[in-house]
Image (cartoon, rainbow, N blue to C red):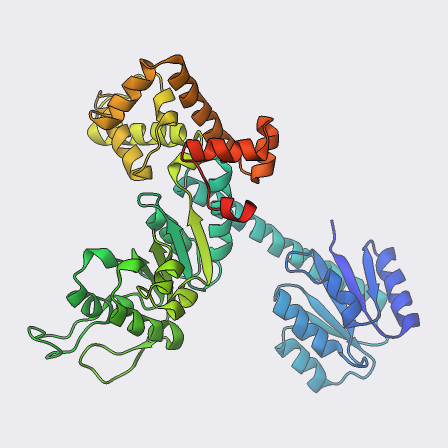
Length: 446
């Protein structure tokens, strides 16, 4: 199907005459008397070709060209002028015009230009759709799950992978924050650059600045050679700062300067070194709350949380637990060169809270692959055994908790969830609190 023609001309007679010519040529036409009138049709993914007069009051054809290219540089723009000259045509082509036509234009010639421009636009959009489908499949293979929370997170990751702003990933321990960071890197424009990860909690406070910023010989006792820091190593790539809440205040101050100026100084050095990188940070803490009590720089919180992502805990992902468990069991069995074990009853997995999240689930899957009960010995197994041998009341409570987890995993507001469960919202709040399933949104909704 040919592209829609967005036709812009302030002369009403010319506008109608050209529109009729294009319609007779088989095109849908949106006639507009000005750039302002045309703006509602100028969208990045729109299947359009823009044809505009050059000389118009207020915003001329070159202003149209500039605005269209800012929205989507691949939208073809054809300029038409009754006062054309060679320098004007050359300038138009240099600024990205698809073609330049002098009035009076031969209708057959203009229709041929439209055919070529429409074909080109169709190829561009097809390529984008194909690339988008490939990326969607890629992220579904990286971040497994079908719960509403995970589907939303995948959509956010795909959207943010294309931009270069700083991202802050928040989530409990073991929810896969580094997996999210790697997906942002690998699916974005910096994929060919380095991905440099550093765990801020794993380094002593005395070493973290040297590790991040590097040092020159003699910068401190024992610094015999020059060291290139992790920030420099991430040049033209991505720096991932895990557990950033553990970063000492002095290092936070230096990091803030890097984020603001994209420059750093090695310890003991006086030379500023430019760096081109994307920063992704991860935390399990509330950085804003830490800032309020003086344990984290408030200005750094704002710099890091330009684009926040929430990594949901496993207990709110419903039957993703079973999907992930089966995947990890197959993975462990292949690695350990053992046959897949019989599945058995997996109901206890849905009832478990998974305080260790994905990490804990992976360990449970490895135990299952080795032929042991997945929840293992100790308090977890004892709790599961108590449930199976418990009173009717305890078993009903465990079943209610599983149903609530499944309802949360489907997504929606508390009001929508309560409606699906056919209970009042107040009853839902009380049951969620009783089972320890309250969500971060609860504060806003109550």
